[in-house]
Length: 326
Image 1 (cartoon, helix red, strand yellow):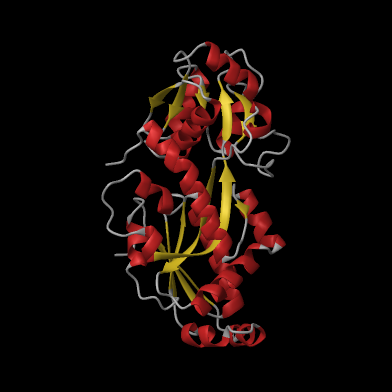
Image 2 (cartoon, helix red, strand yellow; image 1 turned 180 degrees about the horizontal axis):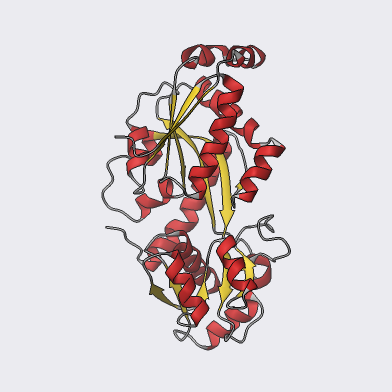
């Protein structure tokens, strides 16, 4: 049963034209032309769902195909559906870090994301902010690290459920800074942010929009953004890496397109090119930026390398922190 469905269908003959202009893509185009594409993505209403709808609408207009958004929450349901789908290029997974990080936190999986899915293109990303309660006597990440080292085990940080983005960002921060700060768990990101605003907790890693809103009201202080480079979503803010003397620190939510293992390379490359081309359009970039995400786009090889790098780093952090979801 499809939880939520959104269909775009544009009658045009663009796919054959695109295929003719792309060497090696004709066979792939012939095998997928005219068929409905099912795009499996997380629950409706979230940032990734909105990004998927924006990109899919543009692809439908470009290619004259029908795209169906299939919202599947829960973390493992969506990837499992695509992992078991026919490798014909007509079932896509548009998902985030959960795909490759969840196996590091679970013993039992009904599919192997590294063997059953093929990375196609990195799509979008968004960073978090590092914020502290105003009562904390620090004005930079470096000062926060120094304070935490002077008071081991005395500072705390808010977190949603184990393995969420704000939790992993904090654990990576602890790991790289070599500090001991205590996790206080909440049922979601919203109550975790409220705890930080009221002073119940001292440190938190919220999404950019709510974090900046809380800072505007004076209820938190923003020390940095968790991306490797300054972010267009948080103009003027330094990175945690630069402000804290933590070279290499980066904790962002990445999402991209996957296809079932066994999909012919010609189809993988065609989907990657089509997807990345749409992401580079100025109107798409601007529209997605207003929803709180930055567009990326990549080759399959670049996406696979990004996944491998994050698994290598976060595998050590997850193991040391003892983060489990089962």
